[in-house]
Image 1 (tube, rainbow, N blue to C red):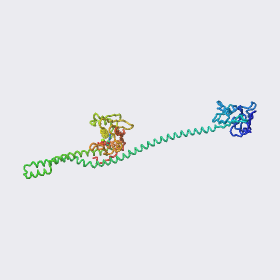
Image 2 (image 1 turned 45 degrees about the horizontal axis):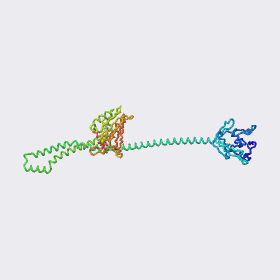
Image 3 (image 1 turned 60 degrees about the vertical axis):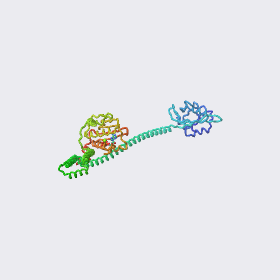
Amino acid sequence: MDDPRQAEGTEIPELVRTAVSALPDPAVILDAELKVVHFNQAYRRMAGLNALEDPAKGRGALLCTDLLELEICRTTCAARACIRQGRSLSFHEVRCAAGPEKASTFNVQVTCFPVASGGGPVGMVEIYRDTTAERHVQERFQRLLDLQRHANLELDRLVHERTAELRQSLEELQKTREQLVQAEKLRSLGELVAGIAHEINNPVNFIYGNTPFLKEHFAALFGLLDLVGELKSLSSTDRGRFEAAAEAADLAFIRNDAEKLIRTFHVAAERIAHIVRGLRTIGRVGGVEMEATDLGECLSATAAILAPLFKEEVRLEQKVELGETVRCNPSQIGQLMTNLIKNAREAICGPGAVDVSLSRQDTHALLVVVDNGAGIPPEMLPRVFDPFFTTKPVGVGQGLGLAICYSIAKAHGGTIEVDSTVGKGTRVTVKLPLEGPPASAEVAAPAATDSDRR
Ligand SMILES: Nc1ncnc2c1ncn2[C@@H]1O[C@H](COP(=O)(O)OP(=O)(O)OP(=O)(O)O)[C@@H](O)[C@H]1O
Ligand SMILES: [Mg+2]
């Protein structure tokens, strides 16, 4: 038997003592006065007693609190509660102090159950389980869980961040792709229209240049006919024949109509020549001379030319916040400003305003033209830079203004963007590098052929 202690007068059954001795966990038997009656080896170790130590010797049996101090016993004595209630009680995670000076502390689970004999309670058994290691494991587990939760949160954050980055990259990629497609489409269109312009240019110039001669020739012919009609030497038969022929041919109408036709040809040829000039501009904006230019001056000169378009009900506002010059071709930039301001003005019906601003953004100059006009429907936006795309009536718009602006911006190494909301207005943003286009862009061959430029 493990170091049994038999206090005088207790009636703890022998069977209970034997059972306590056989338990692997620390266990102790207390009598009704809570004096130690018996304990096993595991309890001896836990209480910090050596093999020979006899806690009861010479002083009589000890109280349980002399060997072990349970934290809960400061408020409720577990053993007394158990005896009083006559049932087993269990206490978890109880702080326990043992050994000399109660210096060794650890956590235990304590289960007490009463021992009855001869019809009444005679004592109780306390069984301990050291849960310190378990607690350490739990704490480590909790720490691991916290670490994992933290790692999960970090992972979530990284995934979110990466997803946002990827989404942004994808959007940028799509935008770049659209811009490339648009740029390629406009490049092909630019070459096409420049080619057409080149082909049309000569015959149009021929018609335009020769209509004045045609007018003169007709005038000479009619003068000659008038002379014939006035000849006194004509016999009455010949005069009759001449007058009959003139009447049959409706000479009076021909005279009147020929003049009108020639005038119309001239106007039409002039219009075609104007279109051709626009087309040729699209094809050959590159390779022009660049010089340090004050865009503010360029803007006020353009505004002065366009002033007649702006009356009281539509204002043209200018805001110049650009201190430095820009290397560009002033006449092309003037044309770009003119086209944009005209578009903005034409979009406004009734009262409104066109705001033009010049500012700096890093290494670029920003030209922004904003109007509060009709706006552009979203399905039309991708087409506004296409040559000949126009929503204006025939004779009013040729659909070349923005195509020319695009070519000019591109030839200057810049960009042009249109944002618009139907019913609210349109914002066109042109970005030009302050230093001008890269050297390669400046000397880039225009789309039109050499002979076209003679
Ligand atoms: N500020 C604007 N507000 C509303 N629509 C616009 C604006 N700018 C351009 N657009 C639309 O884009 C089309 C193309 O413009 P673009 O300047 O190329 O040609 P256009 O003005 O029709 O003719 P052109 O400029 O050759 O006289 C216009 O017909 C119009 O529908
Ligand atoms: Mg226009």
